[in-house]
Image (cartoon, helix red, strand yellow):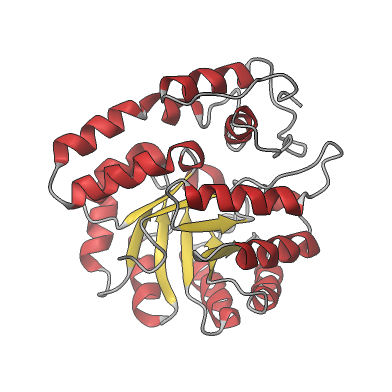
Length: 304
């Protein structure tokens, strides 16, 4: 079994009608996700709208969720400011989390030595906690080079995994082949989970796993057992979810929140600049969920 489990969700952050952090709703959502196929949670990552959360909100969220569930809770402590990332990582280590997620510094587009120094500093601040790097160049503007990933995995003992949303399974295969034993690659792109597990990924840190965690778990486990046909069938069932979960008109996490509202979860809207949800998104969410067999509660009042 992978260190953090096979299926994790990058959890949305619930807000109330005034866009204030709703801790009780976060606890309810976290428990629901664990009951529906998730073996770990990433909390206050970018799907959790981390750029709009202040440090006190993040710490309160991590502590509450970590106390509410028995699965690993990974805290999204990274930003594009190394000093701030180090400080927040150090504080997060005291609230019961199981690890930290370190996103590539966005917008700044540092060179590879700068990336290595940034991640190394966060790992040092994490102490004994394991660190998962997050490589998502479409949002950050910079790819973590394979040489950099392998060096960090080899030289920094508590850098133990990468969430790979780089969109290049062939390069991911090369990284896996070169990484030291025990270093784990997770798919960070739901639509590429099947090809990534085919080259050695151990699981997924997903978004569609909000509503399809059990199906994604079956996909990963079917492939691991050699039942590739079943994994392909499940993947085909989820194609509409992959299309829905992020688009130019409704970027992640707007669709995930719409899906959770359709399921009766009090997650609220996204904070600006993402929110509120564009017209029609809640209806699209209902259609995606219905196609997966969900018996939806009434949609009255779920569009707020």
